[in-house]
Length: 309
Image 1: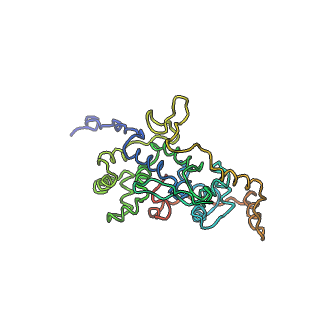
Image 2: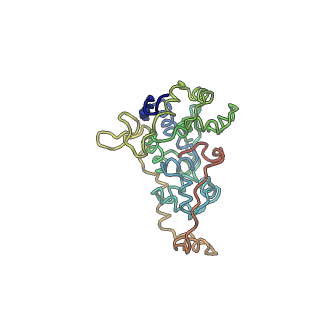
Image 3: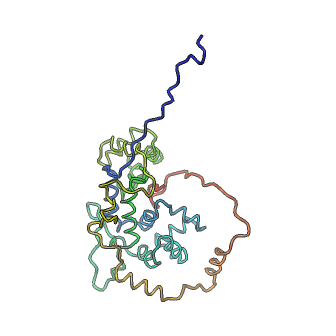
């Protein structure tokens, strides 16, 4: 009987390093192109989420002690929630009027190719009332996706490439469980799901597998040379064809002036001011720490339809 020391040594070689994402695969390019062409038609919640990335809208809401449902209702235009708008605009680094325009203006319709095509303005209609992709938050979302596409999860990249269809809706149309699709994009082997999804994306199966298995770049990494959003010779990001500079319309400038000169919104019962004072005061007792629980099901279609974490 052989002793332990005489046994063959175990193979302790480290695993082979995974290739890094470059942002130049067909799926990543399709995701960048989709955001570039259709940002004026995307819901305000998705635009804000992309502009905040790698931060999350839900994380920001928790930090502000605001309900996620309240934030999504505000971005959907169901209720104004003036105080929350002001705080979110401050987080985005824009005046409140810019965020208000993104929420209240009508999204641009999509053409047959999936591109946003703003309709001509009616006589006397203000351009402020229609989204055209020139809002500073929309521009921040576009440039952010161009810079960070190689750092985003595979589920996010695929979800952007599929938009306006969501991963949940696609899974339902294929008779698949949404959780199985999300697990496959997170790295759980599933040839059935990945082959069907590659067919929907119009790419080779190995292309999708390569996106899933490749290592994401850290958030904030400079884009690979030649990728969209890579710095030019002067260090500035190149201009996006067909997109005006990050200057809002004249109507938005007028709205900024009116907002700056207008007195702060008041409430008859003073509840908003009392709530603001309560938020400013430090709590007497710190709330107990509760670790965030993982979601029990994929996001619903009326939110984003794919994960941005």
